[in-house]
Length: 411
Image (cartoon, rainbow, N blue to C red):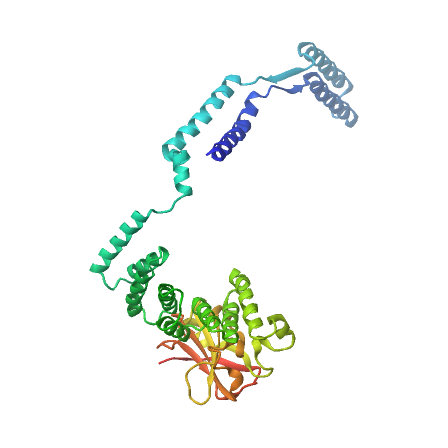
């Protein structure tokens, strides 16, 4: 409140200063030198007479008569006009008083009429600063949502609100029940499945055993870069003392996060700890030695993905692009995945063990792979009709510089 009042007073003061200065200023105006001005005019007229006489346009008698007339007029003008006239502008004091009173009063009245004066009340400010709903309000909201869901059992937004609210207040079992219903409505939503797994794990005392990890694996099949599923996979592996797997999952989480995301920095400590416990060198040292993510040198595939110009009108800049490698023996499970957006195309990619879907299935262990690039409007890695894709023939692991074109639609 104090800051608002100070700023308001300062703004009104500045406005008044601009308005009152011209009204209060008492300044002498310009002095008009009438005599000097008239003398200059008469000099010009005398010069004209002399010029006319020289050119012969007037006679000597006419010149003398006209000059005598000008001298008489000049003498009369000088005697009748004071040397100078000083024009003085007097201050408009009463106008200034009126403005000084009216402006602040009008501004205050206008704010009182259309502003929010109650917002300046200390009690209101304190309430806003602690703008947290009470438990009674939360319970009332949950009851309202449940009543609505009884009438609209397929309301996805309602089930999502109910699940998140229960999770926030620590009712993990109730949250899991709501997510279970939501999973039947959105079976291929990786984000929802990860949240469902999280709620179940919290309800089991932060244990990922059983159903939570089934949901996590399903979420990663749909979206290999789903951050919460990667984080939970790393934590589950770490709890089992499989530190190498934990480091791999957390490395994938870090690689998939935006470059400016705080998550990249926060997860670095977990990666370093897991690598240390697994007897692996720190990431920086491994990369310096030419082994990114622990993958043997040369055991990767790389290239560039482009979109066929004929399909440019069928995509949006924020549509997801998945580039993945799968075994050439017919298995559909990817062994390495990169995710990007259409706006990133043409995209240079490298598929190696740092992009592995699971620690036990790595591209470095294969001889040949098939590389696939798919554009998904839904954001899911599972193919759907209408997605756009491009696929290579079998290529040897170690192939570099391949060109992959997305040129057809999934039937």
